[in-house]
Length: 399
Image 1 (cartoon, one colour):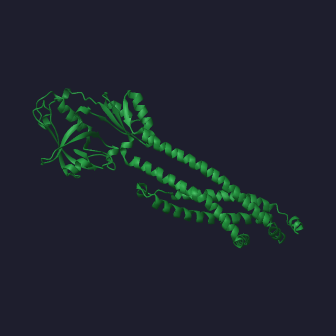
Image 2 (tube, helix red, strand yellow):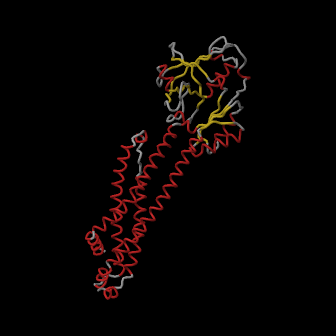
Image 3 (cartoon, one colour):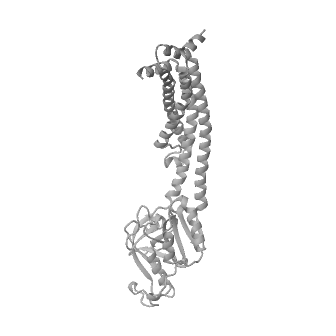
């Protein structure tokens, strides 16, 4: 085996011009494919990352005035497409006044129900007892930070006193998640505010007058749900609309467009790779076969000195493998250079999120393995020609 390896390498080095040509052919096909594959990864994953970083991309809100019960929410929560769901109180009572404890500054904000597992609160699993999350604009206007004490103040013309709820800031929401002034609080807090507006007595909060709270039946106007994945968004939206007969709002069109773009880019890249791979395989097959045909007399001489046909067949196989490895090394170096040039020419937000041209190590290894298999399979034709070489016949044909 060492003799065959030495002979194959020395012969390959002696004919270095053809080796360079074969490497150039491989690089000419592989580098553009690698760049296309890397751009597809970079652009598509950046778009997906933008969607996944903003939980609103997975959110579904019901529209209009409907009637939902806790049992409805529990049903939706049990669906495999659902990651989180919460009921919503009546939109008429969504607004509260927020002020830092002991300070006069007050801002009006939209109150949004939340609960454990709400993607809006990630990476926190949820809020603690008597905690709220506030949007970045609201926090900036009131000078709030995590841990600060605040008060939610609600007043109604029919009530003699304000409802004041003491809470603590558990989280400042990233600006991309909540635009404007917003407060995320548990459903119980919003339900309490609605009961205040409905003129129920709340003795524990200093509201002694009003109807008995024990006779109140909670009324939930809507539902806010989050899909478990981008792929589950459209099915979850369709299922909610069919089950409850309501209209919903979601970024389904945008998400579907990005997912469709990924599929189309993948199909286009696969077709391009198939055509290019076929051309590369044909070039290598004919190239290696021509090499064996050109070296028939040398192989015949080796056969006469005792090398078996199987050993002769290994010579083009070894040369093909070495050519493949060298071609891959050159291709990946040129790909790295092309990627760096592309990053400079098309510098954008994508480059800050991992690169415009991105190739994962696992993908690179898979491509390399595929090329080695392709080149080795192409060399089999040359190896078969070498195995059929009859030294006596070849030498008789020599001039």
